[in-house]
Amino acid sequence: MTELLLGQVLSFAADPFEAGPEAARLDEALVIEAGRIAAVGAADALRRNWPQARVTDYGRDLISAGFIDAHAHYPQTAIIASWGKRLIDWLNSYTFPEEMRFADPAYAAEVAARYLDLTLANGTTSVCSYCSIHPASVDALMSEAQARGQRIWAGKTCMDRNAPEGLRDTAQSAHDDSAALLAKWHGVDRLSYVITPRFSPTSTPEQLEALGGLWAANPSCLMQTHLSEQLDEIDWVKGLYPNARDYLDTYEAHGLLGRGGLYGHAIHLEPREKARLAEVDASLIHCPTSNTFIGSGLFDMGGLKAAGHRIGLATDTGGGSSFSMLRTMAAAYEIGQLRGRALHPAELWWLATQGSARSLLADDRIGNIAPGMEADLVVIDLGSTPAIAQATTRAETIWQALFPTIMLGDDRAIRAVWIGGTPRG
Ligand code: GUN
Ligand code: ZN
Image (cartoon, rainbow, N blue to C red; front, side, top):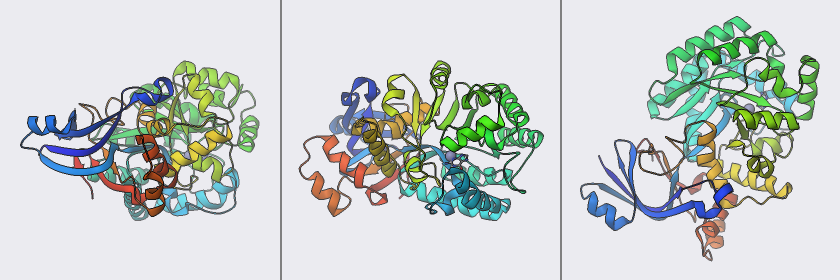
């Protein structure tokens, strides 16, 4: 079935951090064939060229690439918005007890389905998620995403110290379980396996070394971990790895630094760390609602983008306080303001789509609307609540029309989601 969608079609010809808001394009229509974008352009021309297409008219709604959440922990779905802790006691009080429950495959399957329901309802078509240490937690998310036709990335979280009994593997079992899951899922349909050491404090050097070896043997995989989120955490890493030059060095020394490496948070970076991350073209993942919620600090988007870093945007569910990438963009805007850099709506939208796709090395497939791209789309109602509608009635530009939805919008703004060319509600 050929599909023709009418609306305000937003795409990016370049990175607006480099080219300015003019990097964005607005068209009237797009055509989908065999799950991919076949054409973008003027409505009349596309109607003429595809007279047999089924037409869906979204009126003045915005049609965009679906949102891509580049760092989430789906096993933390049920503990989102838990009160009053900072990173290390938050992990011990809320996260680890909840992740323990994923020893039960039925519970993992239930939460995986709920998590993908919640993210899709918020317009997120792709995620890159940590699972728990249990291999069945990876099977649960992969199977559920496969059934929905989604492009996702996920991996078994590896921890062999500083975690409770029942949530620890070993260097060898982490390697072997990850290798088996990689063989089972990586490249199957739209699924990709991600090698996932949680962070240096919960891995021995031996475990980091084993996972570095697995990454070297499987360079088409991404690798995800956490880096320099809170000052207490950095002190802890210094104590655990006395010979490391800095936090990043604990990864670098064990083969866990490179292109395709995703480093969540990356707030309190030292000059050497920034230089090395840029040099190897690693991906930094900004998790703004998490950084304010857990009290971690203010990511330097302006400075790091200007220095050429590859940066994605993410919720960090459930350290993050929302499943919504709209709310995540709003928090990124607020953190930018606190650092003296007001991110333009074009920059925010680009981060939630193209930026995250680039961070996952997948911008040739998802994160934009252009011929050949996979048709993962979100359709946004630009007047979804009375508060937003009254603010947008005066808008003279698309950015004035879109910014109130970025700041005030939620799942009510999501008019429709398309996955691989198929509408989902
Ligand atoms: N650092 C190590 N594990 C986690 C986690 O689950 N959430 C956050 N925010 N930081 C972490
Ligand atoms: Zn995280």
